[in-house]
Image 1 (cartoon, rainbow, N blue to C red):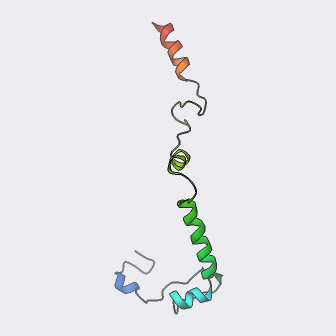
Image 2: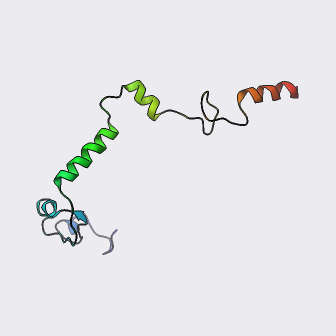
Image 3: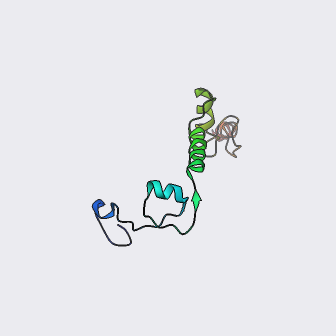
Length: 103
């Protein structure tokens, strides 16, 4: 669905019904010929640098797999107690003492 109604893909192809925002004229001329653009923006150099930076962030080259797993899949204990994690009122020691005293 779009502002102009529900259309098929064929209706959009080469329709030039959008305005390019944030792209330099060199990018628009090569990739979106004929598209309107009132303001400039990123050229191919900037797009390449941003793409490379995002790729390196997603796929670090120098981080070993175990270290990466620990970094991204680490559970800091926000919801359940974890050794070395965030402190909770009901940690295992407190629960054990409570269970002994309630017997």
